[in-house]
Image (cartoon, rainbow, N blue to C red; front, side, top):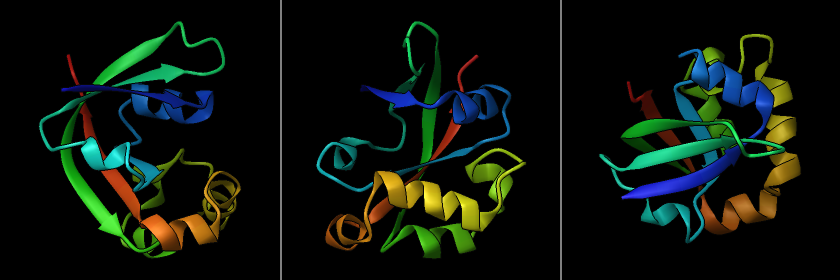
Length: 114
């Protein structure tokens, strides 16, 4: 199955360059449908005309982003210029603590398709 997700340019570019290997999302109903072996097409915001295709290699289920981020190097989760504290603040803007507690979070381990 192929899923389509939007991605901000900063994270899109890190993923395209093979640095960002884990995409972080809320584990809501949409993300519960993602399975190992599926493909994800990431579309670069804001115009969504550029995209990359990835394969799902693993799913990391956590209660919140803080515990997930503690288990992996920042380079796998973001770009190399972001600290863990900055990444948590960014994620909290998109996904409130209440939503994280309600749904949990997911780290989607990906690899670029050639």
